[in-house]
Image (tube, rainbow, N blue to C red; front, top):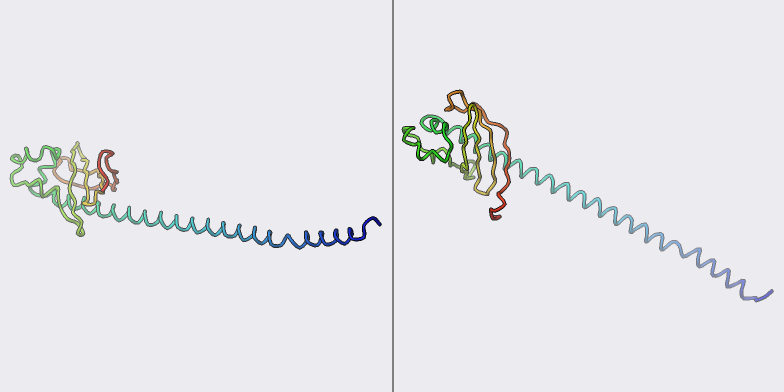
Length: 170
């Protein structure tokens, strides 16, 4: 025997190594579980934000659809004559359409939300209507017209429009 205490020290060292793996393994496992739960939580929050955004977009689209319906309702009687010309010409063409009031056709309130017309551009059998809510939300609609151009037959689905790049954010 070379050293009597050598065998005893070797035995103690092996026991320490054998019993020392549990704590690092437990720490590693808990770190993996923590990261997994954080990832799941992040995905859950992201999904909820997407859902809220979709609900808000649909609410705005519905308000803009209602504004387009209000335009359609107002574009009857004397105001129907204005549908023949682009909105930029309405004031100068007002004499051609007796009793027509362009401002009543291009402004209104729907569900406590003021709206205004941005533009009307007629073409044979259809027109392009652009509207804006007071909060800055905008939409475009393709409007189906009768052959004489003075009667609205239908509206397309709402096409939400973004802000102009030069326009400041509100």
